[in-house]
Length: 115
Image (cartoon, rainbow, N blue to C red):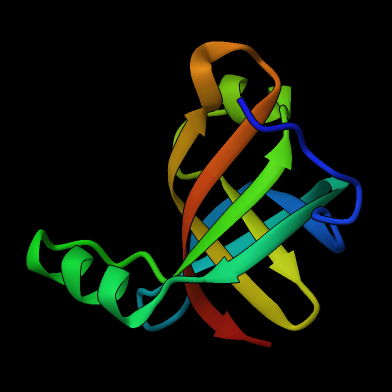
C-alpha cells in the first residue's frame, strides 16, 4: 500500500449528511443536508478513457476522491452522504476501504451540480 502524503490531500472536502427529505409543491424531493465533518483529501477527474470505459458498463462516475479512513462512511446508510467542494456537489457512488485496513477510502463520485 502506498502511503498518503499530506501534499496529496490538498483539497478541503465538506461531508454532508441528509437530514430531512420532503416533497415540494410540484412533488420533487426537497432535501436538507447537515455538515458532519471537513476532511482533507484529493479530488481528481477521471480520464477520457476511464469515462468511456465506465459508460460501457453504465457508470456515471466522473471523479475519484481519496481521503484518510472516515468512519462515518462505513456507518451511514448508503446514499445519505454527499461531498461539497467549494460550489460543487458530488454524490458518492462507491466507497472502497483500501485493503480493508481502515487506513484510506477511495471514493467513486459523480459531480451533481454547482450551487
